[in-house]
Figure 1 (cartoon, rainbow, N blue to C red):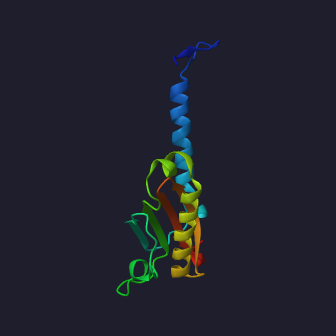
Figure 2 (cartoon, helix red, strand yellow):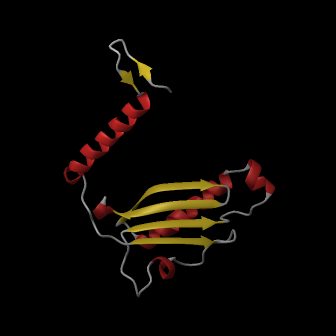
Figure 3 (spheres, rainbow, N blue to C red):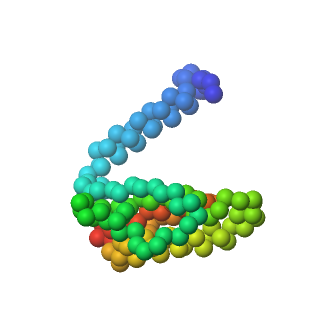
Length: 138
């Protein structure tokens, strides 16, 4: 884009107008931040596990709820290789991944209990990612 001369002889620079507008919006938002936000100190458990297409015998408590640590408010969890990474699972059949993702979700839910809710989850071929948040902070 270029600077445009207007009928009254003044110059108009659309890039400068955009930058000034964005700066004004950011300033106004920062002045009102306390009206719309609050800060809460919390802990986040972030873990990943390559399960090698195997099911878990028992519970996930030793991993998600170690006795030496307090409960976290947020659990961000990833699993790799929830299904065998063969041509059938990768190219054709996604239902196996969906079933295995549901299996791991249920294990996590059983471990964390009713005090947590899944707020996001995604699965693709052999990956399953999910985020559980304590209901009391939502």
